[in-house]
Picture 1 (spheres, helix red, strand yellow):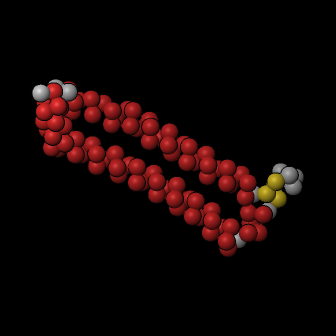
Picture 2 (cartoon, one colour; picture 1 turned 90 degrees about the vertical axis):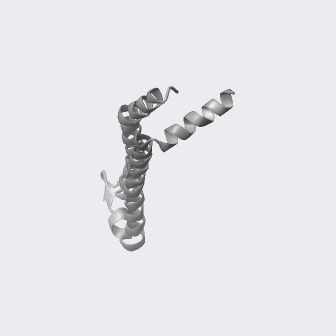
Picture 3 (cartoon, helix red, strand yellow; picture 1 turned 60 degrees about the horizontal axis):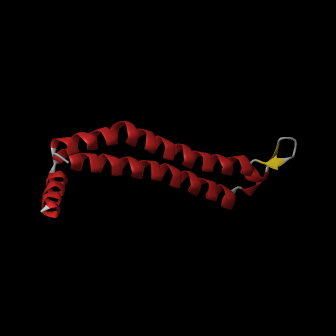
Length: 106
């Protein structure tokens, strides 16, 4: 009996327009943030391919080149954007999902 009840609840939640909007908004945010990271990394690779001299330019008194902090910046960007997604999900998406579940008795 419990499995049937759970299946009915899942079907009702999946059919809820609020849930569908939530899934759509969550996917849209994920794709936008992924696109930002992707294009930044592609830009970095294009710089490596077409302007090695710029990234090889010494900085910090010749201790390192410009490419190192730019590359580290890309890694930090990916981490920060992951944090942005988590913050938005915790603040907005989780509360919306909790409300949907409450309204369906789950």
